[in-house]
Amino acid sequence: MSGVSPRDIGHRVVVRHRLDGGQATDVIGVLQSYDAESLVVRHADSTPYLIRQTAVVAAKPIPPMPLRQVDVEQLFLTTALGRPAVETRYVGEWLLRASGGWTGRANSVLPAGDPGLPFSDAEKQVEAFYQERGLPPLALTRLGSPEVDEFRGHGWTDARPQEADTLVLHTTLDHVNGVPAYEVLVSDQPDAEWYEAAFEGPVPAAAPTVMEGAPRAAFASIELDGRVVAVGRGSMTGHWLGVDAVRVAPAYRRRGLATAVLQGLARWAGPLGGRRTYLEVEEENAGALATYTGLGYVEAYRYRYLTKR
Image 1 (cartoon, rainbow, N blue to C red):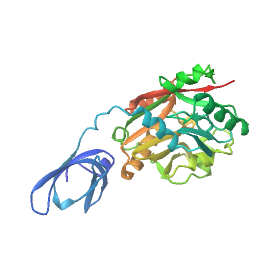
Image 2: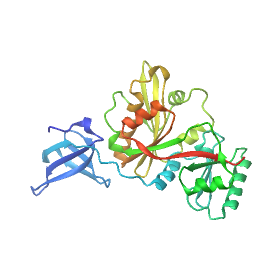
Image 3: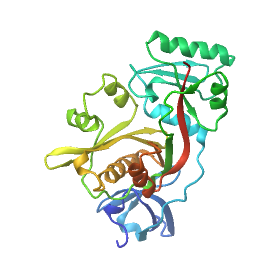
Image 4: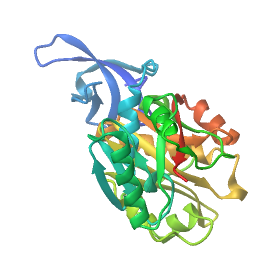
């Protein structure tokens, strides 16, 4: 049929087809699979529709869905689930995380919701948790939230005063899941080459546990000239695809490899029910920001780490 092909897998399409009774109807959604016998279109509610090729009257790609306003508080929690720490504990609804000191996200309290205690009592439990593990007390605070004001009001200050804000960006999956310009291998288990490409030096001891700890994760890589030169990690939490650990070898940058990695992960997530995607980037990383905004990502919120000295 004209207008739709396997290259459109992961994109929104409209397919007019005939039901068994002969009447024609339209299905709009993301093309999930396509072969000589049939195609599958996934509706926005994640329902898959199997359509026989012989029943298709017409089909064509259509523009991505408009980007809706995001539930910031929900996304704030979702980001924590996409990259779980080695050790976690709750104080009420606050999530305490520790991973041997590797990355701020995996070694900070996420103060989302009610700690179930007066702030001063919850604060003592946070400080004791990190002191027992030989780590500084860190709080990942969403700028503009009541929590950041409360922490600052109790003497918490910027842990990294010279660093820029970290931005959390989001978009719908069908803004991102175009056909990659390079072959992207997506695996559910990273190998030694993936880790070698993801880290400039030795792999931190906690990294494999953190990277591989999500219930559903994928590890993308691109190989050129006989070696892995670009990698990225994806994780599914509900209908959200979280993307992190995107890294391109210095000699291969500015070739669209990071874009291809994101597209490969987005196409992995689509058949699993993925509808939206998020990632994090430092405000001063102009190159990465240009790549992500070019794919349709926009800012949801920004955060900073606070500490009690």
